[in-house]
Length: 239
Ligand code: UDP
Image (cartoon, rainbow, N blue to C red):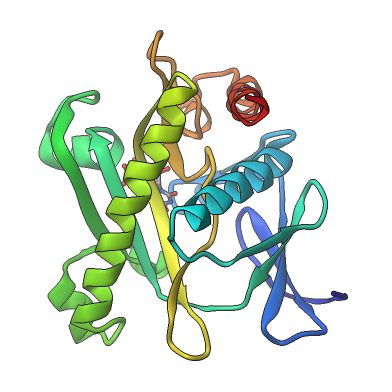
């Protein structure tokens, strides 16, 4: 597959056309942003780690029957993916209270839920990604009720699979964000990335945060945290 012109540049990735209209190439950058672009920085090596973690997670999910956009890792920063039309929803799954959930509902960070919660935001930077329910998504024409149900089912299945994986690495999966897209025939598949940028990952033994919160909250040792996630991932894959 040939890499052609850049079609999109986001906060953490660039997307390129290929000579086949059904496929794109995603290239992961070291750039980091937080608070809707207000805070900017660089996390050296992040692109390589996010590419690798995302691909490992997507491969694992595919094996367990969740359809994803992943096709093939091309090099340490670039991956061939199926072209989708992204559904402008941020699908967030939480196992433990943190971040906006803790702020919004006044629940201490670290409170473990009896069962996972799924929530949706309207992916729209200008509006600050407002929370939305199924009815709102329907009213906005983002998805049908059946599609919302399918997305919820996939999100919970992904949570179970990833919790199992990270548990074996001594990492607690606190919460994460997913994005789904549609193939030309309307099939919904998992797209975007799954990485320490989009997941909260805590060291189970020490409680140490090993994700983008170190950047968001100026906790220091940001690169080290991403490297530690990479180390655990590679260690697991060697087993
Ligand atoms: N998240 C993300 N992109 C966003 C918002 C959230 O990847 O634009 C991820 C975030 O890394 C965390 C989870 O979704 O793992 C839940 O984030 P939360 O709603 O608590 O938001 P935050 O505290 O980051 O504002």
